Amino acid sequence: MTETVKLKSPIDGSIYAERPIATDQAINAAVERAKAAQEKWAQTPIVERGKYMLAMLEALVAMTDEIVPEIAWQMGRPVRYGGEFGGVKERTNYMVEIAEQALKSVPASNPKDGFRRYVKKDPLGVVMVIAPWNYPYLTAVNTIVPALIAGNTVILKHAAQTLLVGERFQQAFDKIGLPKGVFQNVVLNHAQTEKLLGSGKIDHVNFTGSVGGGRAIEKAAAGTFMTLGLELGGKDPAYVLPDAKLDHAVANLVDGAFYNSGQCCCGIERVYVHEKVYDQFVEGFIAETKNYVVGNPLEQATTMGPMAQARFADLIREQKAEALRKGAVAHINMKVANDKAGSPYLAPEVLTSVDHQMSVMREESFGPIVGIMKVRNDEEAIALMNDSPYGLTASIWTGDIEHAVAIGDRVETGTLFMNRCDYLDPALVWTGVKDTGKGVALSALGYDNLTRPKSFHLREAI
Image (tube, rainbow, N blue to C red; front, side, top):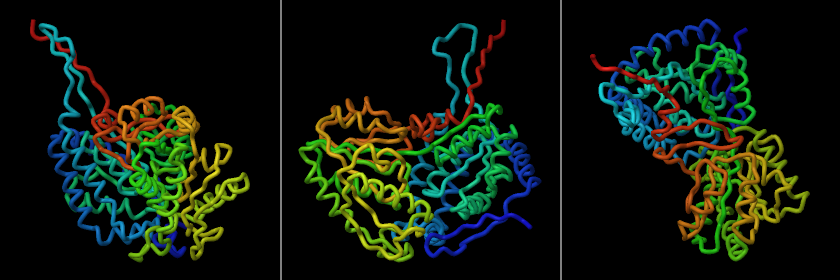
């Protein structure tokens, strides 16, 4: 009997899509097509490769009316927020715009008479993208677009929870006439993925997901010497200083904590507030959070849909229960239909009287719960912000930019925000420290991660 991947919708628990996993023969054929197509694709001018990406973008956007409810059915994001194409457009357009400059050869810094010396940026070959479900288009496009523009071919394995997203990318590329084998969507199980990574036939893998998943990727790739890009867990902190504009901080941090049901790599999971403004901030944060409407994501009134899977919601319930046992205070306690163990429907929660003995303040939540702690000064805030195995983003809320920079220099993070959060700027490199992973995405540095340097040391005619 053929093994299949089943996509269980968080809306009602129904099987929304089911697809057979690829056979070993089909996987091998996909890899061979990718390898065969790569050399000719790499010889295609960068400008032409960029034009294909812009055409793909246009084809994807044309599917918006179908894609928006599909996302809701697959992972629960409310239809009122539309698709992810604002960010997809921004990232695709920017990576196309900078491609020629970012990929051009770099001359030696010390010219020598009689020699031509430079470093060329060659594509890696076949790039595998293992994409997650939480922002299924945005996270995938971070690597797909620059990898293809850099001259690589791409094999996409999308998360089972967002199975149809890979098909949408394939439809868009097929519609614009991308050469066969340059991009391929495949459906694999974990064992097949690990086997493919260990085969030596993949030159680079980009994985966005859990720390455990990242370790499995590294183990599978061991000994192949392939390069890796890993964006793993996060526990992103915010620090609100006394001179912060509180209404702005409250509105943005509530959104940063609870948008997409908190299922964001760079979402706000813990907030440290200076004692001088703590009470006022907490009061505003609670009031703003109570405005959420939890329910069916297909309804326009819904502002928070179910989490993608019931087990994710149960983790949040466990973190909340543990925190309450240890003395935390819950402030929302919103009554939501179907909010019970084993259900993906979950109300947002704000906790105070929290500390770092509670898992909700140190371990990744990836859901609609946030703890708020009072701090006396910068030193205490910095120590707490760094008391985490993760480091993707951190945000400082103040009117003093130099003060924010001074604090940011001491915070262990990949991105430091001031007066904003939960955003990815394609002109800035996306990276993390500690257990958040390794490698980079987007910006000119993202192209360096998807190419290999090749030196040319040429003596002119003698």
